[in-house]
Structures are given as C-alpha cells and as structure tokens.
Amino acid sequence: MIHHLNFKHLRYFMVVAQEGSIVRACEKLNLTPQTISGQLKQLEHTLGVALLQKEGRKLILTDAGKQALDYAEQIFSMGESLQDQLRNPGQSVRLFSVGIADVLPKLVAYRLLEPALELDEPVRLECREGNMETLLADLATHRVDMVLTDRPVDAGFNIRAYNHLLGDCSMSMFAAPALAANYRENFPQSLQNAPLLMPTGDTMIGSSLQKWCDRHDIHPNIVVECVDHALLGTFGQAGKGVFCGPSVLEPHIERQFSVESIGRIDSIRERFYAISLERRIRHPGVLAVTNSARRILFEDREQPASDASR
Image (cartoon, rainbow, N blue to C red; front, top):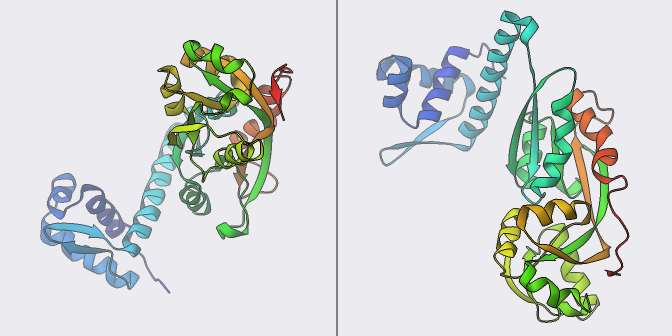
C-alpha cells in the first residue's frame, strides 16, 4: 500500500521521463542533478518499484515507469485544468477526449464528432488515434472519454465497457475516372483481376470484403493493403486501383479524391460504434455524438443504387 505520495517528486519524474535525461530535466526545472536524482530515488522507494533504468547513456522507462508516467500526465493535466477553471470560471472549457480507431475513415470520424463542437456548453476536442487495444487501455484509465471504432468491444478485451451502435451503411467501390468506366460496366464481375486497394485482412471491412470476393468467386489483383482509408483513397486518386468506402459518404469521397463510384455492395455493412465506460451516458460530448449520429450521418443518406450487388 502506498502512503504519502509526494507529488513534487512525481512531477520531477514526469519531466525526466518526458525530456529523456536528468540533464535536460535540470535545465527545465532549474535544479541540480543531485537534487533530482535524490528525489527520484525517494519516489521509487515510496512506490516500491524501479521507474527508470540505464541503457547505455540513455535513461529508459521500466514497465512500471510507463504506467507511472501515464498517471502523472493525467494528474498534472487535471491540475492545470482545475486551476484554469477556478481562475476563469466564465471562460472554462470542458475537455472532450476521443480515441479514434486507426481503421475508422477520417470523414466518418469528422461527421460523428462535428455535433460536439456545436454544443451550447463549449468543449475542447482532443483526438487520439491508435489501434483498438491501445485506445481501450486509454479508456480504462480515463485518458479518453469515448472510443470511435468499427467493431464492438467484447470479452476478449478484458475491459468493462459499453457499445453504442451509431449506425451502419453499405460499402461502395471507387476508381479514378480513367478506370471507372471499365469497372462500372458489369459490376461486380468486372472486379475479376481488377487492381484492388484493400483494407488489411485484420480489419472488419477488409475481412468482409475478402469473404465477399471468395463467396462470389471474384479474384482481384491486390496491389496495396493498408489500414488507412485516406491513404487507399490517395492511391485510388492516382489511378493505382479500385478502393472501397462507406456508401453514406459517396459524394464526399468522390469530391475529396476526384474519383467516381463504380458500384455498391449492399451485403457488406460497415458498422460504427461509440464505446464508453458508462451504460447511461452523461458526458455532453459523448451524448452529442450518440444522439446525432443517425440523424446527421446515416439517416436518408443512402440512395438505392441500380448496380448494387448482394
């Protein structure tokens, strides 16, 4: 059990960890190396674990040190926010920190988050991008208020969290104008041997697309695989192949990447979730996202496509 944690020592540790050396931390804190070294030792003694270790001339964080740094950054960030709000009560802005899964299309993330910036109570939006595991760890330690992703959290993630389905839509295929006419005709059979820019197989949409191709005996030529939808769109804009995107965003994707839709696959559904630690949401930013998602992003956005395939 930890007694009498010295927050001054914790702050010195945080600065050393952020600066990467005691020498640079001394310059920032205007203290001697002996003072900082001594107080770091006291902190480690109090916590009962080593926080830093030498690797050549460098100081690196131990696993316990990484955990301590996460908490220290949260503690002092909250302290600064408290001071700001108490000093300027009429100008206080609530922080809304959101984890965005790297598989989520940026246009979807923007459309989902936009309502949070239009609240009567102003918020400062902080976005953290990463993989599902990292973002759920951030959620568990309250570094983020919500995670936006394309799949629900399940028992395999070892976190008690709640899934809020924001909506779903079909998938469309896009290509640069020079390629679009060739692949629009006789879609989706036209995808046989077509150059395909594909989400990786470990993503929900990549896995679904691969299964759909197998089910329809369609064998495209996969030329690029990556997680980032925007990068796939950039390759598509350059005429390197056909790529997929949410049908609900067809007009936006066509404008952003100067491409054309060549067809829609209604049987592949992209689903979008907000994950929170609360079953009954109270944070105004999270409420704005969950309450507005279907109305703003999904309601009446998809028009029937004559070339849709099942």
